[in-house]
Length: 368
Image (cartoon, rainbow, N blue to C red; front, side):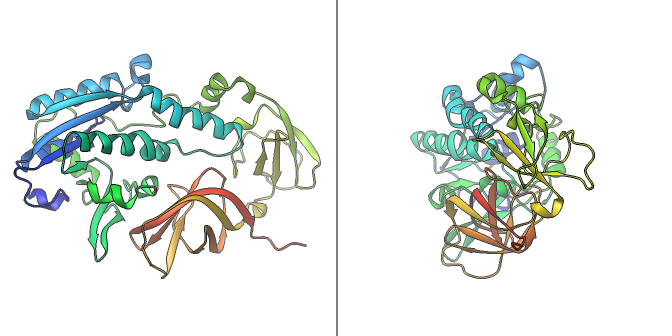
């Protein structure tokens, strides 16, 4: 293997690389590749949330078992490993915001908030404090040197691409970051781990949101915000009451199941959530069509790019043709399931141009 092919960069002998280590196979392989370059390599782990210890479940993230795995890998590689306790910061910036967003009728994406805060901001600060020349992570994205500097691109393996979750990476952060796995498929990464004798080679990938091990988001929100378990009306677009619900936290825009409304001529979907009135507004699928969305917190990596672009409104959504101007994204064709609280990420081919948080949507239906 030629380490330069894994985007760590040439001439690393005598340099210092800090590797963000979660205890999984991806970051462990990054640490091994970094160590093989001849650079001084240091592994650092942020202890964020220890649900893995509590539930005994494999595939957790940044928890007790994962920290032990990261330390074991570092011991095998003969590199230093440091753990920083960021549980309180993670709770404030990620978990509490997750609960508050659900309470406000929004659809949160905590993984982006984690990358924006503890994982990148705090890790980069720690890496710089350690005098590192770069911070390497196991994210599946590519850092490409363009004419105007470093660019963020989709991973080669579309099934593993994490560029949607990294749209908020700033240019200054991108200049310092390295993503060695962006050009590799996941099976090859596991092969490398096995070839290098890493004990985590067969470790399962993280599943669900790390602080919601059983996937029951509503129970967590109710525990943190007891007032979230407040019932309300389910109404159609005219305000006609069709039923009642057990709390807004059980619903998201585009949802069909769980409404428990019978006797309607066509299937009904959640069109929007009104936190102030505790109402769930439902309608036919056509009412979900969105023509444009207003974004907040826009992070732009595209420089003066003004050419054709595509947009993704969910991590698993297919990119669609769109235009962007002044914090407003307009879709060339109606887009469905666009929910406040989610992110819209803009691309030029494989390059991430930037993105922002969806604050409001505009219906694609013409007024009667």
